[in-house]
Image (cartoon, rainbow, N blue to C red; front, side, top):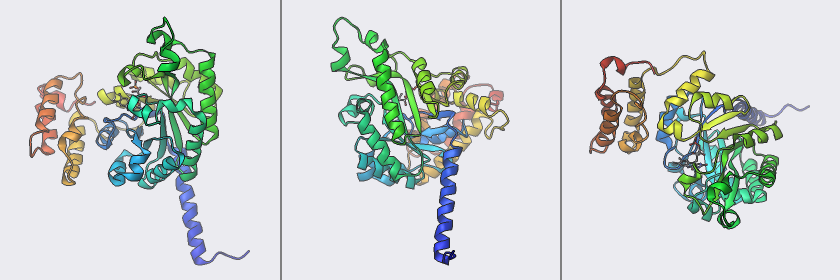
Length: 378
Ligand SMILES: Cc1cc2nc3c(=O)[nH]c(=O)nc-3n(C[C@H](O)[C@H](O)[C@H](O)COP(=O)(O)O)c2cc1C
């Protein structure tokens, strides 16, 4: 056999290294704790903040449309801090080529996973032909997933609901309230969900993230769509049993460590949304339970504030706004003495022209509580 030339050898070596990194990425992504994609909430500042509570949690971006990435200010939309890893980019869209292009841009920007949103029920999203309405078009979603998988090496995943009701199909049924209709989950519903997952799995989807509720299109507000349809973890459990090879992450209504740990007895990971945002310490509690041997990097709220102050300093130097960072940090003293004073000081103070990172350091100190509570371990 002829030995490869120097140049060829170099490119072989480069390829091997790349393969190594890729397989490492796939194998080391620990999905037991995931933070949900949340529009206007899980921006890069929020994700950086949440990282301080759970060093290994997989953090999802808010949904970004493929079109915005392909034709908008890509660098700004995809920017994130290295400390956010592992971090997944959630895309919205339904056009395979467009999604493939955006997925590639996401991979090039360094994201560890590309996720397709098939669960968001807002009218605006439905009218743009992405989000939960796509669950009614499994073949199209499979095409999108296949195109994305062809474009990137990092895992491609799909976030979905357990089912979708359109106002035409469901809500117009006579004599039944919305609550009654969304509470139903019959064999036809399961068949539709099974068919959807089979198709996207066959197309290359590596993980199914299932928000354990139906979505109602055109009949409920986005907020009601996260509360009115009942949670059906039993359906997600059935999905996991039917697809034992497919990692399944369950999402919806998980509020505490106990709920998360219970779910982890039968699924591969839990995704927390609102609770993680409003009470980020739930992530810390879960981290402690799942990584008992690991020492805390940050032990007190004051240390968390110091970390965020340094982050704010860097961001302000790059033209950022302090209030864009602090708005995600209001839950830091939740349930503690001085929580109200902390929130007020932070939200009012960060809007004052010239406010800087010192505000964050002072916010912790000024929260009206005994001095001993300031450095209390968290
Ligand atoms: C303010 C807000 C924005 C959301 N935006 C998105 C989104 O961009 N993409 C998505 O897939 N889900 C979105 N969701 C839904 C969450 O990801 C999650 O599925 C839902 O909140 C249920 O989980 P939870 O009960 O833990 O909050 C959003 C939820 C909230 C509260």
